[in-house]
Amino acid sequence: MKRWITLILSASCCMALSAISLEESINMARQNNKSLLMAAREIDKADEQYRDVRGSLLPQLNLQGSYSLSKTYLPDSAGGVIPSVTDMLDEDEATDTDKLIAGALDGIVGGMIPSSPQEEGSLAMQLKMDQVLFLGGKLINGIKAVDRYRSIQRLNYSVKEQDLLLETTNMFYQTILAQKVVQIQEEALDTARRHLARVELFGTEGQVSEFDLLSARLEVAKLEPGLLQAQNNYSLALAAFRKQLGSDDPNLIPEGEFVLPQIPELSLAEAQEIAEKNRTELELLDIATEVKQLQYNAERSNFLPNVALTASAALYSAADEYRIEADDFGTQYSVGIGFSLPIFTGLSNRSKASYARHDLAIAKLQQQDTKELINLQIKQNHQRLQSALQNYEVQEQNIAMAERSLELAQLRFDNQMGIQLEVFDAQTTLASIRLQYLNAVYDVISAEREFTKSLGYKLAAE
Image 1 (spheres, rainbow, N blue to C red):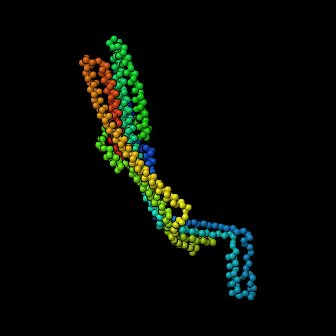
Image 2 (tube, rainbow, N blue to C red; image 1 turned 90 degrees about the vertical axis):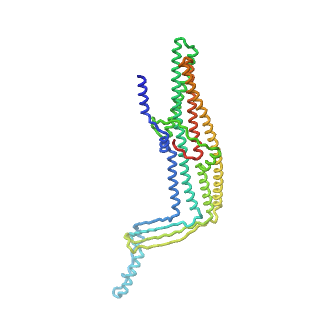
Image 3 (cartoon, rainbow, N blue to C red; image 1 turned 135 degrees about the vertical axis):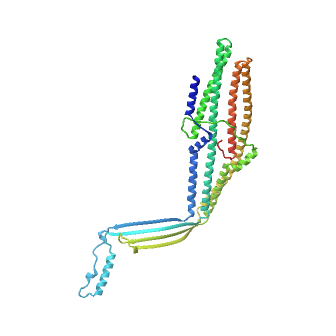
């Protein structure tokens, strides 16, 4: 009955847990990792920045306009009585010509003295075009630099993606390893408890000594803290794994087995040669050095003239009343070429060019330093992989011998040629070697991934 209850509880726990494979883990990490998402946004920003700078090559058109109405009230001192020339004429002696001239004069005088209020309407429109003709190479170099900056952001994304994949893979297998350690510790403790129960049973019958009884109890006491530590390590590894995936699911657990990867058979010299061709970091530094060269070229062009074409067409009007008639409009057209040539800038341009030259020299030194660091990293990862493989071969032989030793101890006990303690010792030894074997397999997987990544190859879920 207890067995069926245990099976039912185990099945219920498995149904409650949400198992996830390595490939699914990597895909979830890609979708939720904040650093990778920000890197993708940086690519979009670089694309927009490139379009912005490239747009400076095209004509810049601007349409400006205004429409206004105004009403002005003049002070009384600005007005006054307007003298009339017509009223000054003698009606009897003035001729028609005199009256005509007097009326004209009245109109002129009346126009000279403002009326109040004054109403005025105005409309103005201007279409202006600016076209860069020559900037001494600054604009072209700037566009090239921004284009290379786009490439840098894409490569940065690739580097972050590979780092994420490697880290997720390591955490995936670390969690599985921690889980297997718990299982082995549980089995070892269960074996020790069953052995203790037998010894205590034999002790009541006087068939074992007090020393044997204390030894059995001591084995149980030694294994219990190990199990607690293993369970705690598994809980921590599981929490770190879920955080790596960006998941809040408390039932999410990795599901998979340790499978030895295909090991690349490369010498150290071959590995370093491959890394020099494939490493994204070296490509990034090549582009960064190229950008510094473009910046230096742009600073040197500050001594050259800047030439631009400007053209405009304007439509304007002014009326002494709110209503604007068709014949109130005037037009204006202009076109011209302007230039600017620095004569003396207080040695500022020379200092900027010198600063950019030093920046370029630093970038070249960084290239050399990074190349040396990568060669050192390749050497370390190559040695680590070889060491992990050798350790795995040793542990593989050890676990085969431990399994055989357990078979012989059990056979001796079944044939009454050995004692139960020999079987227990063989079981304990096998559990210890199984832990070492699992660690050896994990070390091979981790070392192979590190070595493959350091070669510049793209990692993929296996």
